[in-house]
Picture 1 (cartoon, rainbow, N blue to C red):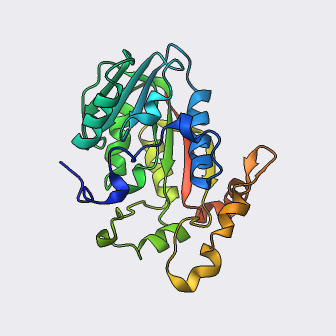
Picture 2: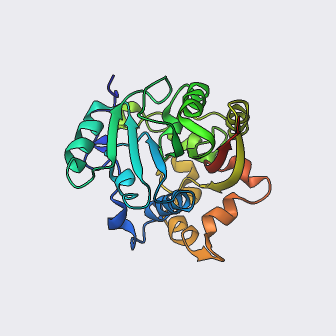
Picture 3: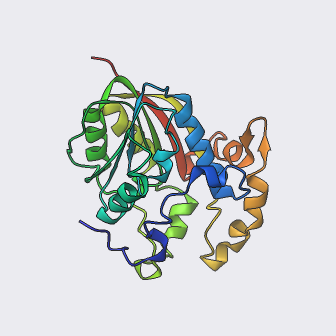
Amino acid sequence: MESPYKKSELYQPKTISANIHDIIDSNLYAHKQLLEKVNLVAKYINPTSTLLDLGCGNGATLAYFQGKAGTLLGVDFSERFVEFANAQFAQGYSNIQFFTSDICNSFELPSLVDCAYSFSCLYYITDFSGFCTSLSNHIRPNGIAILDLGNKRSLNTFCCRYYEREDGYAQNTADKIEKQMAILHDAGFDVLEHRSFQFLPLWAGKPKFLWPLLHPKWNDWLKVRWRGRMLDEWLSSAPMLWRLAFRHLVVCQKRGN
């Protein structure tokens, strides 16, 4: 199955995933946020870990962990992305494999994994419960999952409604963050860390009546780091405000048998 957004310039194999080495010194907010996620994964793996990327895109993010984890596995439903990943990393990466499958359904992997992550993907799926079941089936007891979740109750989701499929944007399907956290718990996962981002969208240009909250200057201010975190995270993690933040970076552990 292929995405209905196949022709969109936003979702092309070459650019769907950033090369982490190329953005380490970037000053863009989106790149700084991605580095926060990547560094969080690095915190939970070691050179013997089996690492799984769910919704791996073109494989560039997964390839960054070469040498940081022992075995690298990537899964994506797009044949175009997986073909590009295999062509890009077929040589020089003996410990990396890519598979085409729907991450919300059952699929086969060579082994259970120690750590799994999913970035910028789960707020486009329509069966989060199915995803959590699939995740639980592929991760070892006491294994770690690092999930990038969206939130229906957010300004970002409201703005997304003004961007149609004809504009080339995939539709945001995220449920309320509280409901997703409950589903994770019921699937056998306990939360170790919960970090929040994007109380403001920091990308949208419409609707126009929200322009004061969508001004690009917010990106410049909120990407500034203070006491080890971006101001965006401090704002988005404030009491009550976190429930209205769009992006939730959740580290959870599968309960042991």
